[in-house]
Amino acid sequence: MNKAVFFDRDGVINKERGDYTFRIDDFVINEGIFDSMRLLSAKNYLLFIITNQGGISKGVYSMDDVEKLHKHMLSLFVKEAIRIEKIFLCPHHHENESCLCRKPGSLLIEKALAIYNIDPLKSYFIGDRDRDIMAAQNAGVNGIKVESNQDITNICRSL
Ligand SMILES: [Mg+2]
Ligand SMILES: [Zn+2]
Image (cartoon, rainbow, N blue to C red; front, top):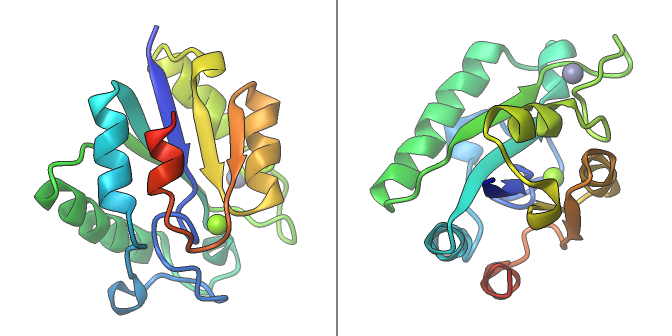
């Protein structure tokens, strides 16, 4: 079986701004992320991003905006020789509809575990919110709570 590290997006990979990030101009990669991901890949972890994008449901921005931003993000990773297996996102918001994919729901993690044959016990979810850790626990993955915009290189080195 494979092992994986799941990353929350806003506050872990890029700056948590206290507001929705959907414009490329507002997207700033956090210190240490490239090194962190390369360290994990070298240890044979598959890398995933799992992100709540409730702003889509609220009409703040569109799926197209998110796809453009993610294309930009992936191009930055490619330049750094980092491979992200897949980005999973929930476009819903609990004020408008209920779903199983919005964290703390664990459906997106469970999908990744099944599709990529991943052992949850050897895998980690790195997030800056309690709901990230709850999602991880609901899927049987080890949760690691970090401060928003923290440099996570040392944490990743220890995995
Ligand atoms: Mg976050
Ligand atoms: Zn959802």
